[in-house]
Amino acid sequence: MYRLELIGISKQYPAVKANDGVNLRVAPGEIHAVLGENGAGKSTLMKIIYGAVRPDAGEIFFNGAPVRVRSPHEARALGIAMVFQHFSLFDTMTAAENVWLGLERSLSLADVITAVRAKAAEYGLEIDPLRPVHTLSVGERQRIEIVRALLTNPQLLILDEPTSVLTPQAVGTLFDTLRQLAARGCSILYISHKLDEIRALCSACTVLRAGRVTGVVDPRVESEASLSRLMIGAEPPQLTHRAPRTGAVALAVGNLKLSRQDRFGVNLDAIDLAVHTGEIVGVAGVSGNGQQELLAALSGEDTRSAPNSIRLFGQPIGAADADTRRRLGLHFVPEERLGRGAVPPLGLAHNVLLTRREPIGRGGWLRLGRMDAMTEAIIARFNVKAGGPRAAARSLSGGNLQKYIVGREIDARPKMLIVAQPTWGVDVGATAQIRAELLALRDAGCAVLVVSEELDELFEIADRLVVIANGRLSPPLTTHAATREQIGQWMSGLWTTPPTTENAIGHAGN
Image 1 (tube, rainbow, N blue to C red):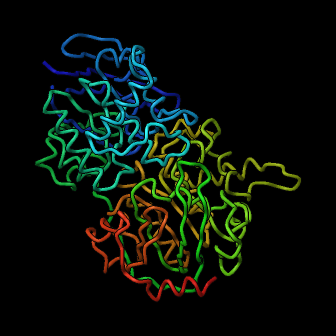
Image 2: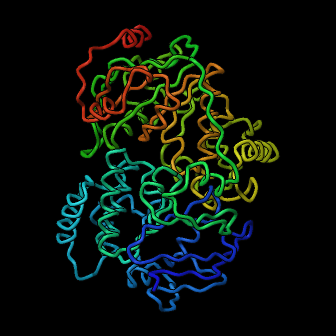
Image 3: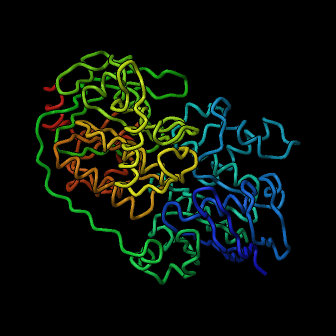
């Protein structure tokens, strides 16, 4: 008897058929991957199982019995839990209060706080249950979602891109957790674009392409190339990484000190950093160690810095707003797609206006044709699957929205680009394209700063690496001289290397 069986599941949206006669079977205690490129229908299928979306056709069987899952509440009553790629958390509530919403009414908030701490400690997921969600990074929010799901003791756990913003150490801990759950009989549906993870963790894999099943395989006996061919019909292109041709200092940060804006934030302590034209500098670190505060200071969201502590092409910008920095050539991709990178209910063409001013005519009149043309060019260049330039941002899959936002900023031809989590939730083909575009920007003379919790990504595209820990920044290392073990140690703040010549360059730019 299968834990879950789907027969002929179909779902049609106005612009696309997300699922087309999908069959899926998951055994008790099985870790089963669902693989597919962005827009293949994975998230829609998972939402159907969880009751957040109703199918147009098909049958669902759970533990051998036919079921109609009409809401997430009914799914949880059956024993189904889900961790969404786009988190379903209330920003103004604490972590514990968010968890409490999905649990039995008989539990008190004090019980939930105790349970969260115990479950987080059991699985090595660091969480402060009393922190408001709006003070947390994306990685910390993901931990809340995972712990909330684990507290329901599910028979079927659905994980949609669970490791997209987790460090390698946290991924290892999560995998141990999932294997323990599977050994106890919990079935796991695991959605990820990371083929190495699927091969290491899962014993079965259903591959979707354009809403249809293209294969059911054992990923342990497949190669990453064969899985990629099933998923996108080809192997992802190999990156060409030329030696950097660095020029003048584009971004110079010297002795940047900022006190946290709330009691849950992180103080920035004497940050020194230099990014030259023609190079990519990567910032590694465990989520919640000052990345948010640093990005806010560099992007212009936080203008409390001393003017001279941040310079862009020699101009003091520490107290300048985001619009002033954009006019000087700085563009920014935030880690939060919905709500910060894009306005969910607005069309993609109107979302262009968040960071681009070309379609605004005299007197503030919008040039709608220009907006549509720009958006269509971004959609075509970055292979964004969307129902045209007027499609609402929230109608896109997570990976396609990421491609659009990154593409919008790259298309602006920035002189300085700061990007957080550039390939979060993006399939292997699109990941290769985004990384190639970042390298092309660098080769064209742009200065690029990438903040990412994926070490493999940073080692693949960055020319130099720094680590942020406890609001402090390590000395820089050239990527070819760094090791994953060393970077892992530095993530705990354990560096003793004295400042290098390149730090002095940063000071000279101030």
